[in-house]
Image (cartoon, rainbow over all chains, first blue to last red; front, side):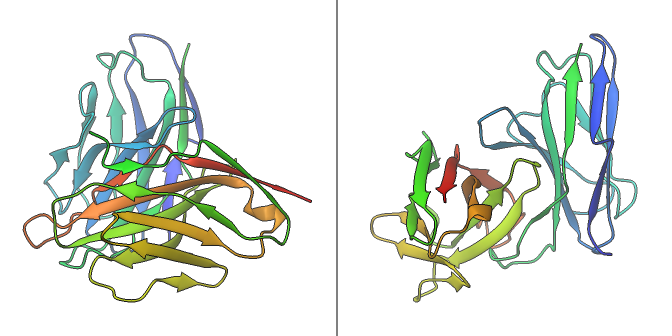
Length: 115
Length: 118
């Protein structure tokens, strides 16, 4: 089935540790994104990538890092510098074109809890 | 300033009735897109409907329709014949068309929790 796969679904991390969330898509989409969602809140953009080996900071990039070595993969690392990392993380992808109507598709999300 | 505003933290509707979820937006772009997503308790984001700023007709997708009032900068979601499975969080989002290309950078509102009563 085509789609976006995020893993793990649930992750616990000790303070001071880095953790990497996986995101893989087989939709052949050019663009990929990472969003963060806090309880009862909307989504905020962390990083996005339009093509392989290129990515840009979103609105809340501090304490996070990404890589885009392959078109289908866009892992997110939550570093120890992120002061409040407990949240729900959503990966998304979309075709890259000049149409503002291209739908962005989301994975099922990863819950990160710092203990 | 908030780019997307959803003023209703929670809404209740009786099964089989219609409900309107409000969304206002702020942009100086002429070309932009407006989206509605549904997020059930499982967390996944489900795309519902899209409206382009140049679309003259309101978008419709099954039981979902978008009441687009460009001059008022509002894009309200109307759900007709509500079902128990419609209970979820609903998000309005906007993609602004920066420099003629679209990077999928959606800006989200705070969401509205819809509860459908039997």
